Image (tube, rainbow, N blue to C red; front, side, top):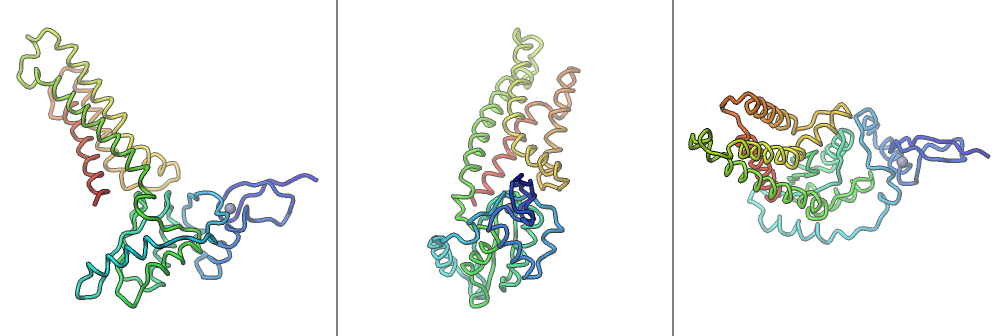
Length: 281
Ligand SMILES: [Zn+2]
């Protein structure tokens, strides 16, 4: 008997099956698909989707949410008189339009006050009033829909490491650019014997800075574009790309415009630093 290749109605993964009526790759996807329709959230499937893959046991797993109880206790201790509490939660990425919409819908349904969702970071800034909303119930509800709420360090440790790595290297490259630009700053590059070598080193360090640092912003933009989605880093990616192009043009023509390799490498370093400070909040 030949097996059929079928696309899962929930996660979109193709799977082999002997069952001609099969629609789901696993019981996790089947459960969430049914739940979404029973809850009246069928619009979820009309939105752009970029699934993480088969859900398998994810909606049914027993999870220790002790860390969340601790975070809530801290939020209560720091709470203001109005009774409005705030907590930061993290969910797995990539976060597509459908997941973003579903999280907001569930938040409103659960009685949450304010929600800011950063799709790129996977960060949820949750505000609620005591007695009207429970982050633990919210986290459990999200899990039923196949969305896991995670402690910040677990969800972002890999990206933090990548960001620190890029920040360190781009800081060093930017310093290299400044160092080898000193003859130009002092206006003695013509008299200075290795000025051509220095100029090439400046271009090399700026290029390395672009490859290592700018890719942090450009890669997710390209990925989003492939799925015909807008990414919030698009303006940053465009600005960095324009500055490096102008820098090369400037260098090739021997012109001395406002934007040079020093500006580009400095800009990349500052943007990474800004992102790192924002993530460390
Ligand atoms: Zn599936």
